[in-house]
Image (cartoon, rainbow, N blue to C red):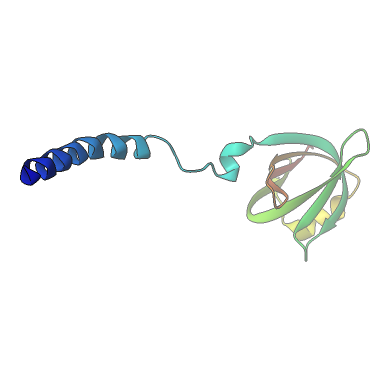
Length: 116
């Protein structure tokens, strides 16, 4: 009698395991930050460039400043010419269009374009 009970219990557990495994793998455990916020575009004027901090501050038309972190992957262009962050420092008060990704640690610039 005890043996039949154990066999029935084991069969029930084995029947349940595939369903539990499928449910666990069908949904991601968490979302990453990049999945949470879409890239944004900002147009305004360059207020400040700090190459040591890898930071660009752009003010929008209403005067609101946006601090944007610059990474090695940030594409900085003036017309079709590629610029460095040090070269961008000479373009303070110029109009600019910035594509950035909002993140908890701060906005990350993916591209900075000065129209020519």
